[in-house]
Length: 226
Ligand SMILES: *Cc1c(COP(=O)(O)O)cnc(C)c1O
Figure 1 (cartoon, rainbow, N blue to C red):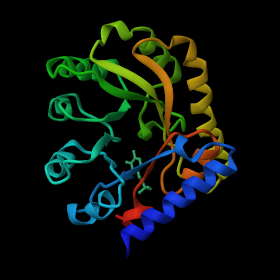
Figure 2: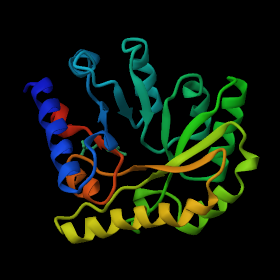
Figure 3: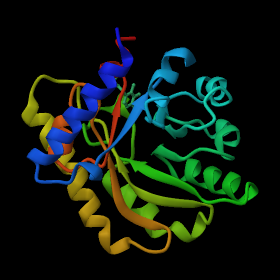
């Protein structure tokens, strides 16, 4: 398996999907999901210029950071409050904020590190309990209370569609995320911007781009199955 060829193929598919949707290819950014993959394999993509990397577990991320100093690290999986302190000094974007308690801890650790940490609110768009994420009204409430979290900045929303062959169901769930983001627009302020929509994985990123994704999180199409 040639990781570099896979990366090029995914980038071409992203570009084609953006154009087909009447969007500029630069409006969609690839986050290469590196979980379970060794550093040697990951270097094949960073050396090709793919610097946005995503991990879903803090411990695994911490094992890789020193070997990949040029990377921009995205935390994409559910995050425990007691792990925030490890990533607070350097994390580029946390995609998976799903509670006020977590946001409070991110803010606290950000202030300690004299920075503001960019975050996305994860919304439960599939209705499946195991996918996690906030309900839309909970997210709205958080956005109204941002003065409580001076170390955090919300850049947009993240969601995961159901695992199903039914494209229409997937499309409707991604659309739901985009509509939520549009509904939250009036809440924009200094530390709330509805700019990013993190949605789409190996199986559904083309649908996500058609529905407005600005960040797609792709693992197995680049690095192979896990
Ligand atoms: C693993 C993972 C991905 C990537 O999944 P693939 O199907 O391998 O592309 C995307 N998002 C999250 C939150 C993940 O945990």
